[in-house]
Image (cartoon, rainbow, N blue to C red; front, side, top):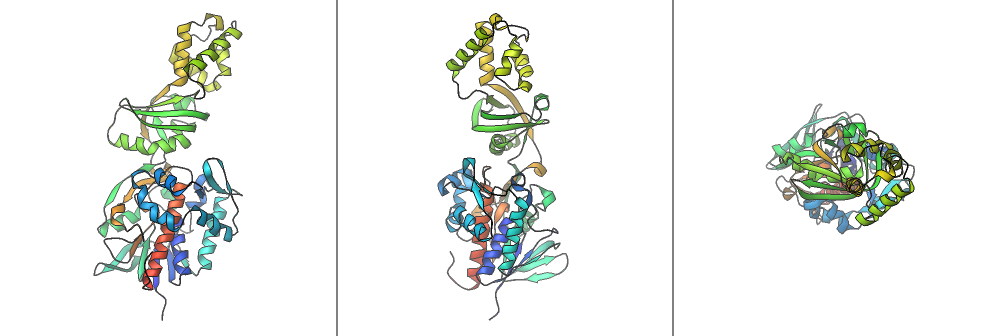
Length: 421
C-alpha cells in the first residue's frame, strides 16, 4: 500500500510543523516554497531573537486573540506551548523564560531556530522544494486534488495551505494564499496591518527620535471614549511610535482609523506609580529644595532630556523660572502634563513594517478541530492566513505552531481513514 501524499504550501512555521507532523504519522509529504530559503520570516522574528511562545495558560492565550480567540481552543489543547518547548528541546534547542512569560532560545538566535526546524522537518522524511511558486489549487468534484506551480503540477490526497499573511512581504508573505482561498469560495476578512508602528501629528515623534520610555501607562481615546490601555514600554522612531505598548494597542487603533474615527488621542502617564497627591508633593519638595535652580534644570530629575523642552512648551512654563518662582498653578499644569502627555494618532505604517496581519480566511469556514475547510474537501488551512491575530509576546507564533501541527495531524489521520482529532 502506497503512502498517502500531502502537499504543504509554504515553508513557514505553520507549514513546517504541519509537514513534520503529517510525515511523522506516515504520510509522504512535500513542502512547496516560492523563496530560495525556508523559514525566512522565522529567521528575523523577535528582532532576531525569536519569541517562540509564552508560558501563559490556554484561557489567557485565548483572551489575547480577542473575538476570534475561541477558534484556537482546540488547536491549543491539541498542541500547546509545553509541546513546543519539548519538541525544540528534542531538536537540541535550549530555551529560557523571560519577563511576561515570553519564551526565547537561550542563544537568542532566530536563524538557528529556523535551521533546527528545517532539519527536524527533513528528518521526518519531508521533502522541501524551494523556488517553486504555486499558481493554482487544482480541484475536482469540490475536492482538492493537487496544485499547479511555475514548473509542473503536483497531485496529492490532501493539501495544507500555510502561505502566511501579508506582513514583511520581502520574506515571501505576499498574500498569495488569500487569493487561492477566495477562488475556492472562502470569504476573506479585510486585511490590515497588525502589531504595527503608529504615526502621530506634528514633529513630536521626530524630536523624540530614539527616546525609550519604560514603566509608563498609556491610554487611547477615540472621540473622547477610552478604547485601550497598556502598561510597559514604548519607543519613538523618527515620526512614529513603536514598542510593546504601541504594538498591542495598534490593532484597535488601525481599525478605528479605517472606520474614519477622526479624533484618536494617545496619552501617556509618565509617573504611573504616583497618584496626583503624591506627585504634587514630590514636585513641591523638588521646588523647595531647588528654590534658586531653573525649572529646566529641576526637570532633569523628573524627565529624560528630550522631553524637557516639549514639556515646557506644552505647559507654557518659562524655562528660566526658579523653584521658588513656581506657583501652585504652575505646579498643577506640570503635574497634569506628567500624568497626561498627549499625542494625536494620524495613521499607521504599511504591511512591510507590521509584525502580523489582521484579517484573513474567515474562521467560520474552517473546522476548528481539524483545520479542514468546510467548503472544499481535503483542503486544510493553517497559520497567519487565518483571521486570528494576538498580542505581541509569543502568542502569534504559538498559534502558527498549533494550527500547523493540528492541520498536519488531521490531514494525515484522515488519509489513513482514522478518526479525526
